[in-house]
Length: 101
Image (cartoon, rainbow, N blue to C red; front, top):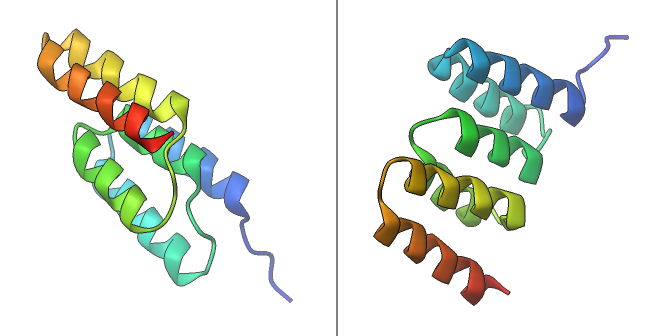
């Protein structure tokens, strides 16, 4: 009888890999999660959005998989766009958040 990692274990692994900048391995872990039927949640996707430069792609995948972003995910995106000086894109994300409510 083996021991299998749960969602919290995978979320910790995803966060640590993002911190180390090992984004290819992060995506491998996400694939493994789906294969093992441990489904990424809002915490997983929030970590990806915060840790990866591909925030919009991650947000799209999140929605396609039926995981609704929460306020924290939207705030991370808005903050990221503001930090890059992309006020217009930050406004677009804010509008998406408003439509989602």
